[in-house]
Image 1 (tube, rainbow, N blue to C red):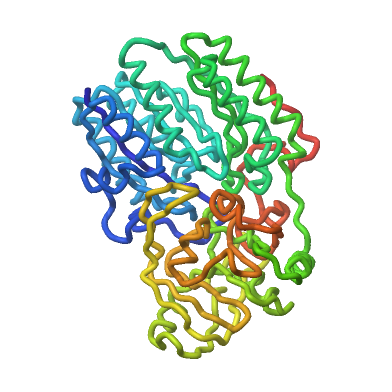
Image 2: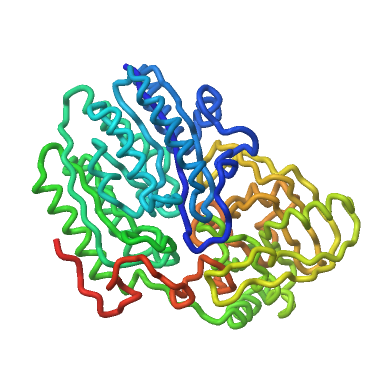
Length: 502
């Protein structure tokens, strides 16, 4: 048995000013991973490719690895990059000789010229090879289009947010594919959308309603009622027609049962639509509340979430308003992670460890999609740490994966240790602090540019959680954004929107 593997993963925030060229998909900071180098990089990691490789190797399959292209969220994928990636994957398909195809795709990729980046790729693959079975692992934030789910034999979506089940999702998809190849099952799929844009801050599987929706899906899979059942909360910061929540269920040759499960998921989600909303509070009030919570020293820190600027949802990671408010209100013993500011990193490197520097941090990327952009923040501090920014994740998201933050420094104001990075990266792991000489457990406050993923590994360290509405293209205030392309009416943009018709 011979299996073809490939990955093309990007979550596109169409409001983000951060460009997405080919280089952004080079995970190690060097060349794009492909072939044996990609196999070696992803084997035994908690990633989708790691899960595919595990199942393939257990089955004794020969593996052909095409490209492994993963980029952190940002603006639309540049046309040249997208076309090049599709050409590479399609060339591997055209070479033939494969019994099955396993794809690691995100599901919310928007390329220049294509709102449905994954669906267009699948369409091109099917135009070359209309018969070889395909299995796809999708992110829970997929914005589903027909070509994404109707062309493949089977698709599986993550059941957890934070996404700690990436490898397990890929394993489920791959094992179904093996059953198809063995003639044991005949997949049939039903799917539907709901006219709703769930707020990302209300999508976590630690709470109602997504916890219960994902439990339904996992239960149906475990019982055998469904081969695969996925509730996709969608990615709301993609201003495309079909952004939003959807459900996809695959059964063993039972279309009526697949449709019944889809209807149950969609009905549940629609009835819980108010619980998928989020209401921010003014920034000054949030920081004051955090300051009061940390006034008494305790064993664990208060966590402040600068969630409007989460680069894992396409944020610039250079907005300064939350940091400025922390400094203004005089919080002490704070670790702030962080700001993506290559110029500031270079200045600190040139000055050297122990040097005192005064720098204008952040606020360098304009954000025309918002009513206002961030402003640089002038800070004086001591260069405490200079690091290459490379580590292996031990827990939480993607364990075993080697991570490249790029050159990284810590600038210490005396009250706040500010992490400055050269590549946008969400602070989700204690390891990211520890390689910089910061023990997160020992801080009074952790201020991080994150929304939900931090819960996987940093969550157990939080004494209290305070959500801070700064400035950024990941805003949870939909009123700050102008949606021109998403279908209307849609909830909560249109509170009186009618429910789905199934």
